[in-house]
Amino acid sequence: MNQTLEILFGLFGGLAIFIFGMNMMSECLQKAAGEKMKAILGVLTRNPVMGVLAGALATAVLQSSSATTVMVIGFVSAGLMTLPQGISVILGANIGTTITAQIIAFKISDYIYLIIFLGFLLSFIVKSEKVKNIGQTIFAFGLLFLGIETMGDVMKPLASSPIFIDMIERVSDIPVLGVAVGTLMTLVVQSSSATIAVLQNFATQAGPDGVTSVLGLAGAIPILLGDNIGTTITAVLASIGQSKNAKRTAVAHCVFNITGCFLFIWFIGPFANFITWLSPKGPEVEVISRQIANAHTTFNVVMTLIWLPLIWLMVKIVMRLIPDGKGQKVETKEPVFLDEKMVNQPAAALQMVARETLRCSDIVGKMVKEIKAAVKKRDKKMLDRIKEESETVHYLQGKIMEYLTNMFSSGVLTEEQATQTAGLMYVLSDIERIGSLCTEVGANLTENLDQKYEYSEEALEDVSESLNMIEEIYEKALQLIKTGNVSDVQKIMEKKEKIQNLDLQMRKSHMIRVSEGKCKAELTSSFAKILHDIDRMKNSCTNIADIAIQKVNVPYFIGDLGKK
Image 1: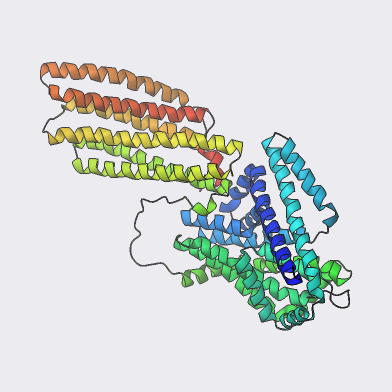
Image 2: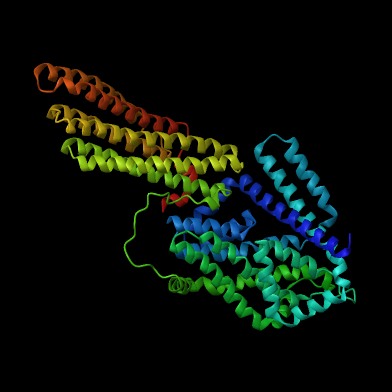
């Protein structure tokens, strides 16, 4: 095999190991720090400074600014975050992503295989899920550095190639060309961390004199600026098909990095001198990796400090670039909160699932009120509307279940998350069942209205009273799920007993009315079906309460974000 192919295969293989290790580390860190991740997300709704801190911390945990950006776009699209809040988190994410470059700058090549072996032992021998996740994180961390080491080894021959040195000199002398190279690299690899790792590795190769870097800090900085521009494409792709505010959040990410590039490109020399002064001293090939990491951090910190007090201006810019459309907003029957791009980020994705489930519960709560009114008014239009709403809830339930199934099958959930999610699926099933039963009650009423049979006023009063109790017990059951406070369980059980007693009383009263000629005998079967449906609604409400008693509650998923 000729040397060129060896270099290409080694470079791509090392890059593949690096990206695999980084993605694996991100996934395992999410599992190991699930609760901490929720605490980080909980501060997203506060002031811009807290938003920046939250974005930096979330990205440090996820080890990917792209992952944080996709998550923020999902939240903004779902209306869980405002545009200014989303922008503040994006600013922080740009700082958080520099942690990867700082870690890479450490020289731990002598310990790579020890780290991989220790990580393997922890994940293979220990049974505790949390310790396994920590072991897999350590294993992935070792793989990340193995990829870097592989890339570094195959790049060494390039440093002595006259053709390659001539190409590098051209890039170093023309900063715009360096920016273009960095942007193109990140567009292809779809990871600024990976391309910066390649840049750090290549820069550590010695030039002809054996002391200075083949690239030099002044030559590396423009490529670094291009890497920052290239990473914005992930945000743009994530915003496709999302709301206008989601697109604006992605554009804000682009504006941040592009304006930074335009600002810094004029001061490459002074900026390189400042970074040299700031960084450890020594032969250039030994310290340039740290210098590049420091340049990356300094660039993002400076740009964040510039834009933080100007978030209002950023909002105006993105609003101008993506203006509001004309016309009224059309209500959608599609899921509002679910985002397929967030399936591999369970802490965030489960918040979206919980919000979509609450949306379904609100629709069904409205249906219970409407069926009660429809019984009194004998309103066929209202009954038709209830049927449409039931179909919407059924459709949404299917979409939520499909989304959760994808999460289970991808293996991203911890045991605790899986347990809570299974409980939420039970809640969702009971909510959907109550909606379907409202439709069945309506169908029985509609059938008798079509046949010109009329229930007596007493019969309708009895049904209304039962539905009143269902409405109360449903609202209390949902409160248990939303708050996790089980103090009202006793009241729900008392209402359950009352509904059961009322059911027996209504059946008895109906037979008396039939014998007295107040109700048609033909209505007996239909009336019994209505009472049976109400009884099943009662059972579904108490099922929801039972799940709350088992500590399955929405606050587990939503946390502080749900208090918006």
